[in-house]
Length: 202
Length: 202
DNA sequence: CTACCAACTTAACGATGTTAATTATGATAA
DNA sequence: TTATCATAATTAACATCGTTAAGTTGGTAG
Image (cartoon, rainbow over all chains, first blue to last red; front, top):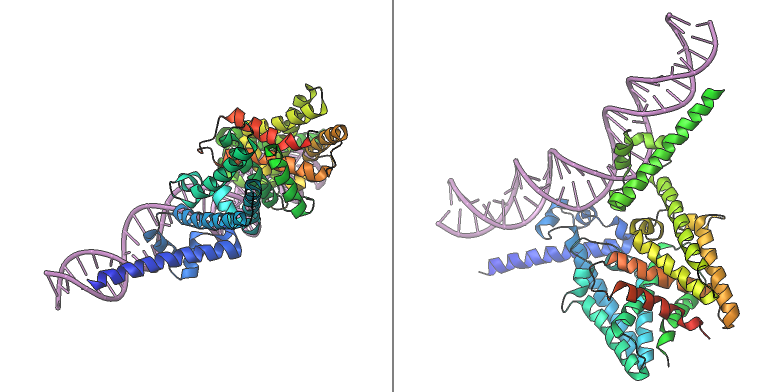
């Protein structure tokens, strides 16, 4: 029965090759160049072979989004772990969220800026145990700690969603309008975060 | 020589018909359904005829964006004119910006959420005298008034861009993730704006 | 050896934006 | 009135996209 297993391994291997190719294209050429045919060409199979391993393109994107969210989560966790107050941890986490989006614009776009029917975005972000869920929970938890400390009478979930919106705003706007005469990038990001968090102090 | 003028009028008329059809499709069926062929079908001409009146699809979108920005500008101006302090005017303006985006998601998406090569977005937004420029200038001016009053030592342009990012963030996130378990919409918007502007007070 | 089954490919469909070649229209000049 | 000729519009076509159906291959089991 080792043959069946070998087949299984081969099958899983090609599946991984497809995801690897998709990721490479996404990062090297951008999400606009990521097509079933470009993936097929890269793995040297016919385009339709991919459909034997994935239901459709959205399913491939779903996996790339999961990957992206995992990396973003890791970056945010790492950034937070260097800070020594709840407020600074939250601040560092948001900064890491933004930095990730700007460092990996194509990854950010496929996870937060495209409506991938039923498959990606919300479904992926919300699924119990998904990295998207972990990511949002991380921010919720850190915000909770800040609100505990400050004692501000605010609805935590509303504030959380507003913080997310503010952070997403600067990332998506910078990505969408790269030619706009923005002020110096780091200054802009710092200002964006400062203004976002000002209301939580005291 | 009246013939030449009549031709001119006919030409201009069909050009308007194309824009009208495009607008109708955008509003009735969404930006995903807006194609050269769907426009052609609506005006009962062949798809390629459109290219005799517009260089390409982007040029059509450019005009729809201009229209959208004009309406958004009007909504923001009107909202501001009801308020009696610089701060409240700025606040009402941002609220109108957000409300417009959520009321006209397809118009918002084509102007702020797609990168239309050289044609739309930034080019349109920046062009001297364009409505996009007027819109941004309106916010800059109102922010200026607020900063004058409060005397806060902040860089106006940085704060302006951050305010824009915050406002864009809530609009684009709500549009992109309609299925997320958001808190009640009005409450979320108010919280978003409150947190955004908190830093400007005192 | 043959029959089957899985893996894979080719062909094709219906979209998209866009270009080139072709036809129809309609005003003007002979 | 008819012939000419630019303009207006169309048809055909290309390259791209995601996706489905049908066909081909090759290895394994009976």
